[in-house]
Amino acid sequence: MTTYIKLAWRNLWRNKKRTLIAAASVFFAVILSLIMRSMQKGYYDYMIDSSVRLYTGHIQIHGKDFWEKRSLEESMLFDEAVMHKLKENKNIIQILPRLETYSLISFGIVSRVVQVTGINPDLENEVTKLKDKITDGSYLNENSKGILLAEGLAKLLNVNVGDSVVLYGQGFHGISAAAVIPVIGIVRFAIPEQNKSFTYLSLTFAQEHFSAFDRITSLSILLNDANEIESVKTFLKNFFDDSHEIMDWAELSPELVQSIQIDNASGIIMLGILYVVIAFGIFGTIVMMTAERVKEFGILISIGMKKWKLALVTTLETIFISFIGVTAGALVSIPILLYLVHHPIPLTGETADAILEWGFDPIIPFALYSGMYFAQIWTVFAIAILSAFYPINFIRRLKPSVALRG
Image 1 (cartoon, rainbow, N blue to C red):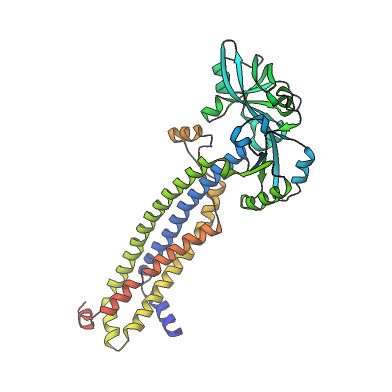
Image 2: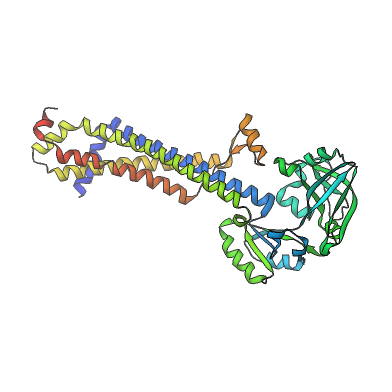
C-alpha cells in the first residue's frame, strides 16, 4: 500500500499545473460554501439576538394566563430578593422586570390606544440601549413622574417635550387609572408600528398609576449562552410554582421562528445549487485530468499493471488533491470569516432602508461555528471523493489498444 501512496503522490507533481488547477477548484468551493453558510447563520443569530434584547429576552416569566389575556389581573408580585436568587445561576446575566398594559392616551382632540411599559430605567438601558434612542428631552430615572413617547406617536398627537398628556385606562382589579402626565422625552424606533404605539413609564410610577403596587407582568431573562435555554428553563420551573408560566423566545416570537425556518429552507436550496455548481467544477477537472492521461493509462496496462491497481492510484491522487484543496480552503477561510464576523458588511440605499424598517441595523453579519465549519468542509470533500468514481469506471472500461492510439 505504501508503494501505491508514494506513486500517487509523485504522479501529482509530475504535472504541477494540472494538480494545482484541480486543487484550486476544491479550494474555492470550500471558501464559497463557508462564506455563504456563515452569512446565513450570522443573520439568523443577529435577528434572534436583536429580538431577544429589544423585546422578549431569552426566557420570560409571567403569570400563568398573562400571555394569552394580557391583563393586569394576571400580573405577579415582584420581589427583588427573587431576582438576586435567580442571578446566582451562572447562565443568567440580566433580569428585566416590566409592567405592561394598554391605555388610551389623549392630547387635545386626538386619542390613541398605546402600549404602556413600566421599566426599571437603568436595567432597561443596559440591555436595550433605550437611552440612546432619545431624540428630544431626557431619559427616565427611578423616581420619574413623566412619560417617554415614541416619535411617531408624538407626531400623531402633535405633542412636544414639556406638554402633558392624559393617560386613561384600567388598573389592577378594575380600578380606574387616569392621570395627566408630562412628556419628558421622545424616543425613536425603527419599526413603524412600535414607533406609533409605544410609551414608557418608570416601574414605580407605573405601579402607582395602575394601582398594581409591587406587581409586574413579566421578568425577561437574558443568558450568556443561548444554548443553555433548556437547562435554565428547568431551573426556573423548579424555582417557581404552577401559578407562573415560563416561555422561551421561540414560544414568545413564533413569527420570527417561522421566518427563520422559511429563509433557512431557501438558504439550503441556494446552498444546494452552489454544491451542484461546485460538483460540476470538480468533476470537470477530474474528467480533464483523466482525458489527458489516456495514453499513459494504456501504456501502464499494456506493460502489465492491473486495472484495479491503476484505479487505486488514481483514487489516491483524487484523495490527495481533495485533501490539499480542502485543507488550504479551510485555513484561508478562517481569517476571512473572523474578519467578517468582527466587521459586518454595511448596506446602503433602499436595501438599508428596508432593513431599518424592521428595526435592525443595515449590515450583513456573519457567524462562525465549528459544526457549520466542518459540515461544509466534509460536504465539499465528499463531492471530490465521489468524483473519483469517474476515473475508476474509465479505467475499468479502457482498452489498451485504443488508448495507445491516443
